[in-house]
Length: 462
Image (cartoon, rainbow, N blue to C red):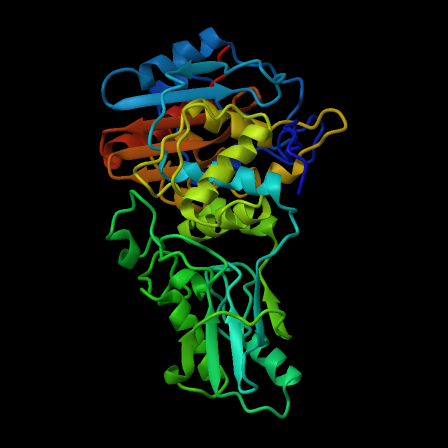
């Protein structure tokens, strides 16, 4: 298990003298469709005017400066129950936020809860760890057992056909392994083993419509393409029996029918016949941040729970997630998680904790204890107006200035809107922000959160 001591981490766009660039050149902003209104330009400085590495000596905004600029866009009742923080990731640990409003108020996070799962997974697992799906010999010579290892990326698609997941494990490779291991044996039965996880398949607080509706599938440790009926559709409909459907697909590739598939358990010390593995955890976390894939988040939570010797259930995974963060030095006071995806309306997280997690992932390296393994959290964040869950946001009006310079994780449920990420201000200083709203329609709040983040991008605020 990776050591759980929280220290500062190298960030490609934050390290002093680093080689990454801030996406803020005028030509790039023009290409992305960013507009600057005359009134906004009169009050707030223009963005960083050239592409260049961010300097570690860039001035830090002051609390008073941030308050003067953020006050007008965070005040009033339009944000409902609102809390937020702005953090300097290069500040010494324990320095506290540069700006805060109700930072300890525990609010429903929506999918920004995935930040906690991702951080706990990267703190617990090695970045090169992978999910594995195995086939072992059954109790009789004509039987094989398909053993789920929690990999939601497993696919029945042939090589060359893409699913929503990066570099997925393929059933075809498992079939080839079995045929090589048992060249003269006729297979007549396939047993599906889902014993790797425990507990219910749906979490408390999930909306029933979210399962067939395409946002999540019943959580079992064996499924194809996250339980999707269309492997290439991110939020398409899901099957109600993911493990059974995976077993049937495997049986068909072996030349068998659905009637050959049954549920069961692999015999103790059964002979291994084949194994396929997912992309590494670091790559899966990047994908998780960009797409906000609920099934992948839950699978990562179960994997970290198993690694920490906890119960691989919703409750056990949530408990181990917070325990891993606490052990790493994060203050998890007020946080209550019942799932790993943030899809539950029973989840509660204070903005302070989201800011602390992102601040650690975005901080420059200092000293011998480098936590560079947290970097996939930042590198996977969607770009405002560019990709992932921010593709269609920051497009016009007061939020347009953030297009291309804000990177953030979104969170949306009924009456829940959150946005947490990083932004480069006009002085070239990288800032972390976490913004959370409950009680108001996302259609109303999301543009306001985008405006707050965009305001930070136009701010020197000294």
